[in-house]
Length: 304
Image (cartoon, rainbow, N blue to C red; front, side, top):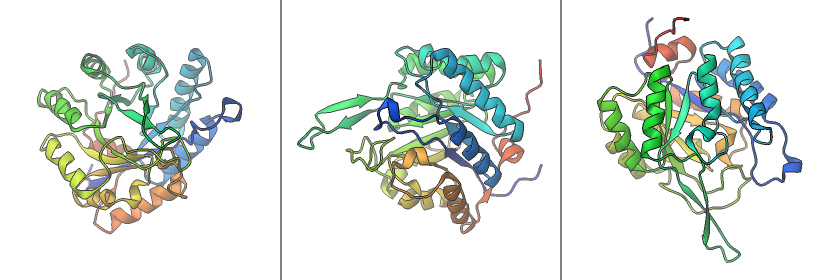
């Protein structure tokens, strides 16, 4: 396999879920997410992040996630995909579906959010007087267990990085060869809006998507052999300075309607086309499918 000299990978967060709607107005994300995933993969995306319907029973959620992965693989057998977490308090409640996917042979990526973040909730005066915690946040012990699990199943990890301390944690495992091939460091820049809302303002939970912020992140990443991508929660990453900078500096980009919170009017597919155009202008070649796996050093799994 001959790869381009400067390959570029696109991830898409395809699910349009809203936290600001009552349960009675929530609609299933399954079919729209599956349709969007196929469109984006056809257009050149390599990685799909998707949500499932949290209103279902836990057993039904696991069944839906498994069905999504299997249905998507029927048309795109080399796609990398990973689900949103399940709700819960303990590690294997939050990742119950991940374990089920591994045991059934359907797992090919999952996420770890080291340390997580607390999102500000503004009161009537506009002050961030309370907060909403990221229930998927994992501490050092949980993260170690998840990395061990990933190595057992040789499943790539999408590392969600909210603070630079998480990068130094990743470095320790990378230095010991414990990061499975296909894994990514996903830098979470903080947007202006509540994730899952429509332009609902919020105090930024971390670094804004600026050049100086990206410089700090890349200094922490250093020369470890784990690819990195930029992303934003609650904003349009393609409208920020870091999208172009990431392309110029060898990084990759996550787009998708889940993340923008109404800050972009583009569809998932339109975002993929837009970032492809940006990449072409700096001689980055989009790779997907088997080419993406080859670039990431992933080996074909031999059936048991």
